[in-house]
Image 1 (cartoon, rainbow, N blue to C red):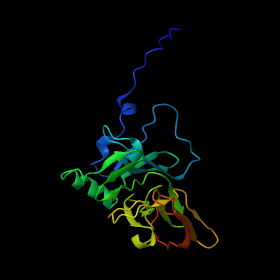
Image 2: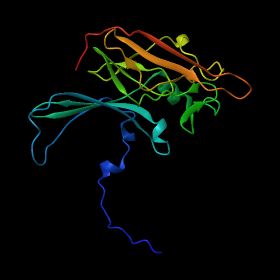
Image 3: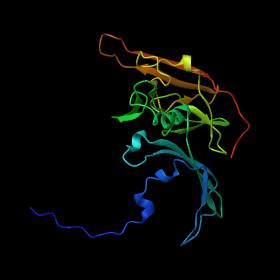
Image 4: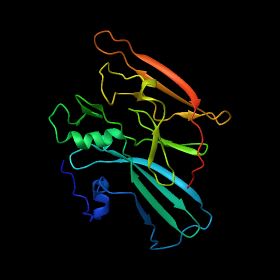
Length: 221
């Protein structure tokens, strides 16, 4: 059976680009240019969205994490975007100049360097914690970020407080956690998990959960 050809469409260039040209750029700000109608007069506040940007030939799932903040006002809507650059981001760039054992490669849903470890891609959930905000990932520690500048501030928890899933002395271990931790609004405690599945060779799996005060900051958009 012959499948009929669908109508041709001319797609704008902006819809065909993953935004990879922004990977080396700085924070950018855009303002909505209303072509028809008007911005609703009863909206206000800020909307945070996390995602990832992939360069050519690289899966979007392992692309660089990025944050978007929409500032909503009665007469205007502005967008601010910034790339999330934890230490492994810079290690990935630097390792490209060395041999294959140092370089990071995309393998399945992960980006791995045989000698350095696993990339943390902060592209999952921006989560408010009272007057602070964090951005999360399934493979790595969550990080606090400044909601005004969208710059990373600090990882949540010390490195030795998280257990790696693979017993290898990597600089960037594979830390499995939840991308959707929860805060107890009454106590201000953050609840999260750290787990691993059983590995070949008889290594048992584990799961831990923790709760603790994340602290407070006076910064806000």
